[in-house]
Amino acid sequence: MKRLWIVVFFVVLGTLSAVAQQQNACTLKSCRSFYELLNNKDEEILSELGHQNEEAYVCFRSDSDSFFIARMQKPKDYDWVVEKQTAEEASANPFGPSQPPKPGEAAWYTAYGNVSMAFFKNGQTDEWRGAVGPSVLWRTWGHFDTTKVSNMRGMPFITQEAPTLNAACSAGPEMNCGFDVNSTVFSFNETYKNRRDSETEHDIEIRLSTARFSETYTWEKDSDTQTGRCEVYKDGKQIK
Image: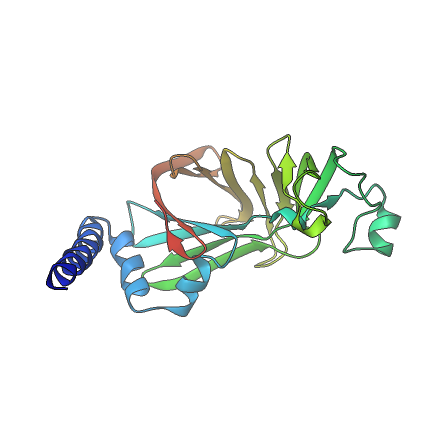
């Protein structure tokens, strides 16, 4: 029993040490600001870090006390339905497939999925952009594996092409913005009027495999780009 308590003690000590090292590694104001909110269990931060079947990328800017969180909801196997072919079909049956798929048949499938960008500055919410609702769809070519189980809801879905999502913003200030997500990159783009009454284009691209990002502002004949790294959360828990 004594040996068991010693093992538990060192496991807990090791976990606390790893967390402390990670927090102490925050050399950026933006990183320290994020952890201040996280350690105080800020409800908005906890929500943005994702729920079940969601991934979130917390990205730290190096030149200011500001960071952003890119979040996406990924489909479960039973979320996929055969892609609707016409606007009339979609209007008549907005939450179901146009036709039941034949067993094991490959086709274009879609599934609902929300994406968003939350921006924080000086420890406060700054801006929020999102694409939500029934028009936001993942799309892929694939089929259900009918050899595994006998009912559709339990069948594994086999993707034969990497799922993609392309959607315009449907929540947030009125402006021209949108998302483009595939198996490699999470991209966000927005265009808005600046103080000089000209247009500013804002682009963010996150490499999903490495969690590295680039962010570019372009206005008139000028542009500014910075790069950095993100932390990755899945189902609300940090994985990278």
